[in-house]
Length: 421
Image (cartoon, rainbow, N blue to C red; front, side):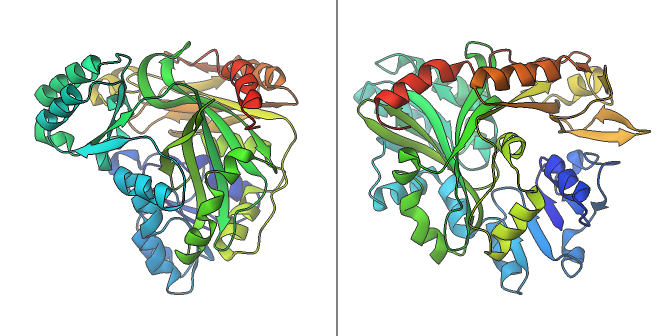
């Protein structure tokens, strides 16, 4: 199995597949991330030279859709996206249009490539808005801004700040009407013809600090469960089944939503593995992950064997996360050792690390050290399991959220009352 990775995020999955007895090679596109995985799995320096060697090829990120399609056309079995699913995620306007085409209600939104035009729009249409970068800039999660002012004045101030600091480099962005409710994601694997059952329901914790304070990071941790019967799935991803089949998609897709007593509002697609979603999913799988990936790629798998109950996961990160600051990373975090009090690594997933003399060392440039997962019949059980495992891990200058999973206690009551669980 050949893994083609944008940033090296897929290391943990590649390592699991290797430990299941398969031959594995990992290619990382980003040059500054290429140390990730050394000592864990064999590396490839030009993935195209290993196409003939591979029985299965796994692409781990959005933007590889055309490459996936080209490789599939040669008869190779591919787990990954398509040009259509790339566009669902990267072109927010197209994604929203496709939701409406599939009879799914969306929030009002508008795309801009001019800060002054966006400011003028808010002044003419005062409301609470969410500012979302589009295209490649959307990878910088700290740029996403969720406004709280009902007249949009806080978003206007942010637009002025981005105009001064980013200028034309910011690219296109979207203003979306803000609604209050429960944020929830629906994820599922698609085998080229149909969605696999069960599907995955996740609750992301995106802010840096407990209590949803601080900068947006993309994600600091997630809680989740698997279900065969989901009103959320039936009203979001299920209507896309025939379209994804027409597009030849073999992979994982996720739709992030806000739901409240008035309805369900899809926000954005993730047409690939979610990170850290896939690692926490793995904690709930009874099937080997290699078997799942192959069954999705060749279209033979329709069911997933999973644990009952809940799964949670939290990142342990180091400076300068979530920012990109090479000097700070090299000063505080580069080659720092991850120490285990006891020789027990169950539930500890290597992220941006390498292995030297059996020691785990932090590498790359983002400061994501490990993800620690836990499972349990109740959410509290899963939380205890995870935080007990975290206490076994020593990461100098490391920090993590201490409230991953707490949202479930209130969110579940709301979702039950709205008929969505």
